[in-house]
Length: 380
Image 1 (cartoon, one colour):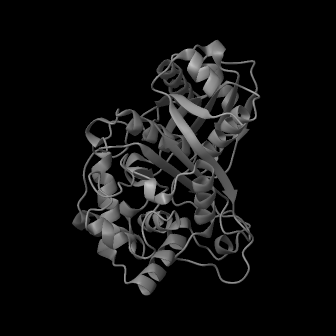
Image 2: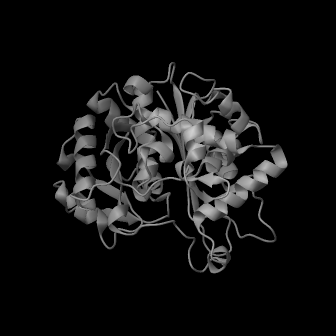
């Protein structure tokens, strides 16, 4: 199976774009990724496009606006993991020897679709009981409090860290640092989660150009970043009461990614993690094995997950700071990892960035622990 490299990366600003369409945003990200890779429109052999609420043929619309048509285009919907699933699909096509140059795009224009809190699929028992996603995660937070002594101030520190990082990211939705006190003073959404601890409704797009090792060598691009592992897992059927403070789905995806890449959690230098809520970052970092179970929130307070800490988490600002246009999120995480590994992250550059991890988990469906989870590990 062939090695896979990220040769180009592109991303629009995340935020609210009332004057732009999803196709327009997608085309902009694609063209930037192509320019970054130094390849032409005609070099792209196939494309995978992740989105959630954008309707039929999103990929054909976005790529068409960018000048790409006639190639195989696959549209991917896998909840919040739609974009990162597109990367998984695209990478598998190269590993199988089918293509040498492909593109993975994630795009979403959420502000044009709805307002308010996300809900699980209507078939899910929690949705049938009236729960929204904030309330689901609020219960997980309360359980984390009960089991490990986690506090509201510690969770607020996670949100504050990510908003502080986002202020250093010119593409982030939020540009202003927020203190722990300001997080706690923001409106309560679902006790103990405040407004500043919940990911916003966002628009945006992100894209990566993936190539085989042979094509990388042919093009002579020294800036290519190796995709050492790309793993996709779906949730198992739930039997009995779910485990609320440990994500087995995240853990299983991470364990396979570590095995495939030959890189253990102790070698990860930094991570982009799916922090749709402050507590979600804690559950996922612990599920990835990057921090001991139950200890992450307290260690955030100590600065261990800061840009200059032991293991920086969500240097981009994460979903809480950068924004969360669902289909684009997983690709944007990989874009950030690529730019960190190249030393192109500007004021938020992590010293000594050589190995990075991107984790994206999405959705709830009837009777399963979660819809999908991806883990991508990248190295210089």
